[in-house]
Length: 555
Ligand code: FBP
Image (cartoon, rainbow, N blue to C red; front, side, top):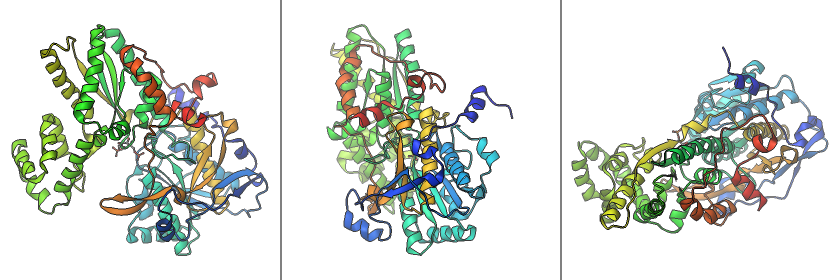
């Protein structure tokens, strides 16, 4: 197979580890802190996780490791959406295992959690590992969105682990997958199995973070990739001076990606879902705010601009969120509803049906939406009948409604500009990029840390690397008990123990920095052009973490 020049160079790149992990393994030990508590619902969680609740935070420090050395067999799963760096988590784990004992084995379960349920795996060899070092993607073993939840699934997993003689499993995933890791760790302990479970925090969305987990991997590379593209579009807008570009960015629930990209590129508009929800803004108010910026720029002769829209915005708008929830109810949970509805052909007939089944206030919102969006709300339902929010073209919705608004303002003599809009969606473009140096180093360290946690007998932990806003020479590492990050939330109408998702903190420094500048960015043209991710060169060009991480950690 022929390789690109960058591919060849990246294979050779040696990721940076925290200083403590650069030592021989017998010079590293784990120090345990005080017992911990979950972030909420302590009594319920203690009852649900009697064997793993309250474990102490684990710090990996220099010392002596008395652990008797025998070969370990460990499994690894990639779970959920791709995120740059996943291969390096596996590489760090692999190298740790082999350093610990040359006969240790790493098994990769294929296609995500379903691979563990069905016992489908490959053994990761040194030669195979070397073909994936420092590359993007999850293609080494594939990923999937299945869950290990039911008793039948748990039984199958236990049987697979026993048959192989697995000492441990690493689950590389987001909040849901690591909630699963906690459930699995608890179950293994409950049945007296010695198989350990350790998670690694993954998601480009950046919403798996808390007081102990500074960032999820992949966020850095994805945001830098999108910011390069946004910067290029800013430059195009500035050159042609004739288009408004509306760019939707991934981030199913939280707006971290949009916020970080705004900090990196200084667009004219960036909507933040969490702020919309907090201020209870209506769709009309959002549209007016966007139209206002367009109008003010037009007054200065600037009929161009760039607007960023987070994917999850639509659900944060209270009236649309309520419509989506109600639509999902009538189309998914009402036994008669879906079958009857699916027989109707044509939007007109569907509208009549909905009028009779939706509360009037929800129907009024539905009726006010552009036809294309109405169709998407009705067509794009998942296997449970729920509306698939990520497939709704929010960027087109906003453009359509802004057009209508500007037309009215033009008739009233309030707006005299020209509005020509283009829409974009940046999502998949960033999920499998070559990991930035930050993600390559961070992921390798997370994987290596996971091995050290296994070696020291820990289970039910999330691998953690800290002080990541500084150079890797100052990084520290350890393990955080997963139950510590959990609370009880309603999921599909039932209370469930889950890791609390991190939304954009409106009181936090990243949002405040954005809010303090957005007025100037709206009317002045203050674009930044970050350019492509650099892998080689001065450290301030190629090793810098995200603005979000720096602002959050520097306090
Ligand atoms: P994870 O949370 O599993 O990492 O996935 C996040 C994400 O990339 C979202 O930003 C996006 O909405 C979603 O995955 C797309 O999912 P799919 O890959 O199933 O189309």
